[in-house]
Each structure stands twice: as structure tokens, then as C-alpha cells.
Image (cartoon, rainbow, N blue to C red; front, side, top):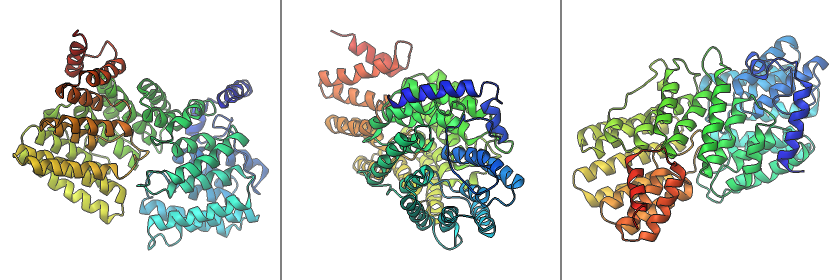
Length: 543
């Protein structure tokens, strides 16, 4: 029986069993555990028997990366069973977001305090002590030891657990997650991802309702090389957690890699709707903002600009978002994508700064830089070099702050983006060779790191923009190569398909032009009225 078939059977059984239970969305929001609507976790602990189900619900939410909701479950458990050391372990784990971003200083302090409480309660078994010891390795000396070193220590602790308890699904899951968290960002062989994927495939076979066998496996295969291996798992994920926003969103990481834009839009619409019903501390969940950014992106890739604008307006209409790096990225990126993907340079140049003024943008300068990237690129491509240089100056400051904060990954991307703006400013000034050199370096920088899980794709790929510049220089064959390289990373991108077709058309290669253009109109459909797609249709209509 296939994975999907097993899950269909499971969901049917589950639906009958919990038909009279509290609705799953309400339960998640309230931090309750009335059903198995989050998958099946079997994690034995030595706390009171009444605590077992609640604890497992909290662990399941951890595996779904619903950290705020999970913390609510563990905090409630700690109150109802104050002697339960593993409740404190759970609280500590909710402050570690290994695939997202380093915890804030406040979160590090809270996580460390939870570890201390867990130790003081003296976990009853060696296995429980090992779990506490593993997370302690991450939080210990957080004031002086940098995040990468502490993540590596956590991985070692989780590997020890995995080796000692090979039949423990959660020991397996957390080790695979830790191995993903330590994957080198520039490793294009994806060695860590392949090993984690192997482990998680085995977990999925042994425990086919465990959320980690879906969620973490999607993360492991969220790259151009491995994405086709995760299609079945991606489509099956919502079967175990139909009301968990992140379970509805995560499959789209694979769909994005494969350019399946209708699926990306549909699943993220469902994810956003679920997340809207589950606020965190009175604020709209980061999972809502995250899903809406993906929704904006998907609609733009098929030329559905009206739908993209509706999604952007909906995103902007929320006044208070959860304080999270994912919220910050989504707000900044979606705002920038809308004009940039449509090549509306004047609109990009006038992009508003800090659309949500009450959000703590000072905590996320490397994401605020996205706005200045859009403004600067729009200004440069519109010939306003002075405004472009002003944006570069602001981005220089954001780059320094990223480096000072140890945000090396994001510093690379800010660096690429500021060089991109500088390239187009140089071109506007007539320094054509310098411009091309800067643009090539910007593309190489961006391509040196893999896509982060927080984004469906680069705000506007540097390699794609390099292709644009090559076309402007009449270097059509080189432009085709640049667009092909962009498409190898970001399948079925509308601008890259159009650019490749346009470069081929200008180079006199009609057959190549038609192949890209036909793909483009197939993706866009008949309803799209973007000028460039209208031109493509006219070209294809010629005999």
C-alpha cells in the first residue's frame, strides 16, 4: 500500500473516532489535545499518566514547527503537573527553531531557564536525562558561544540519543532535524540532506502517521536535486494534520521546486485560512504571513497579477503580526515582489518603507534591506542614479548589522542585492563593462547559497537580472545561458522563461524561442493579459 493510501485509510478512521471532538483548529489555538489531528506521536514519559496525551500533543506540534502553540501545550502541562521535568524540556525546545533563524536573546534566556527547571526536577529515566542534556548543550553558555557551535553541540546530543534508542521515533526525528540544521549552506551536493532524508524515509515506513516523517523529509528534499523524491510525501502530509497551518504549507516547498504553481497557490490559501484562526498571544501568526508570501509569489508566476495584488492587500491589512523573522521576511518580500516580478520599475522605486510601522523592524534589518533593494533597483532601472545610490547606502548599513549579528547567510544575500543595485546604477551611468562585472558577481554570490525555507524564491533572482543586462548589451547567447541557470534553480519562473525566449528570438533562434514561449503561455493560461505575454502570443501566432 502506498504512503498516500495508508494515510487516506488513517484519516477515515480518525474522522470517525473524533467526529464529536472539539474542532481541531479551536483545539490548536486553545492549546488543548482532544484528538490525533496532528498525527501520531508515541513518546513515553515518567510524568503522571494524565500528562501523557497532552505531552505527546505538544511534541507533535513541535514536529510541525508550530512553536507558539506547542509552548502553550507544554506550559499548561507544567502548570497541571508541576513535577514533570519533560514539560520543561518541551518548553525549552520551543525556543529552538533550528531551520529558521537563531533565537533572540530573550528566547535564549527563556530556553536556558526552562532547561534549568527541567534539571532541577531530576528526570526519572536515563532517556529523559539524555533529551534534557541534548537541549542543554544548545542553550549552555549562550552569552559567549556562537549559534553555529551550539547547534553543532545539539546535533551531537541528538545523535547520541538516536544511537542509544534506535527504536525511538522522536530520537530519530530530532537527530535528522539537527543534521539538517548543520548542513553547509554552500554544499551543492546536499550531503546532509541526503543522509537526513534516508533516516526520515525509514522513520516514515516504521511510523507512517508520525509528523516528522513528512515535515522534516520535505525539508530534507527541499532543493532542486532531491525535490522529485518528495512529491508523494508532500501530497500526503495534510492527511495527518488537516488543520495545522504549517502542514498545509510545507508541501508547497516541493511544489515550488517543481514549478507547480496551482498547487502552491491552493495549499497556501488553505494554510493562511487555517493560520488566521490560530493567533499567537493576540497577534496574527507568522504562519499566516509566511503562507501569504508564497501565495503572492505563486500568482505572479502565472501572471495572475490581480490575484497577487488581492493577496498582498490581505497581507497588508493585518495590523499586528507575531514578532518573528518569518513575519518580517514575508511582509518585506511580498511587498517587493509585486512590482519587481512585473518589471514595474517606477512602482518599485516608490515602494513604501515599513508598511507595518508597529512591527519591530529594528530586530530584522537584513529583511528591511529587501525594501531598499526594490527601491534601489527600481530607481536604477528608471535612470534615477541618485536614488539608487541612496538605497545602496542604506543597504550597506544593513549588511554591516547582519555581519555584526552573526547573520552570515543573510549578509550574503544583502551583499548580492546591493551589488545588483550598484550594477544597474553603473549601467545607467554608461559604465557598461563595470555594470556587467558587478551583476555577474552579484549572481555568483546569490548562487553560492541555497534557498532558505522562509522564502519560495529570491525576491528577484540575480542570475535572471544578469540575463536582463546581457540582453541589454546584445549578448543574446550568454543571456540564454543565464536564464537557463536561473530556471535550473527556480523551475517555471515566468520572467526567466520570458527572458530566455526573448533572448533566443533576438538571437534568431526561432525554435528555441518557441520552446520557451510555449511553456510560458501554457503556464499562464488564456486569462493573463500582461503585455509581455500578449507579445508572446502574437509571436507564436505567426506562421
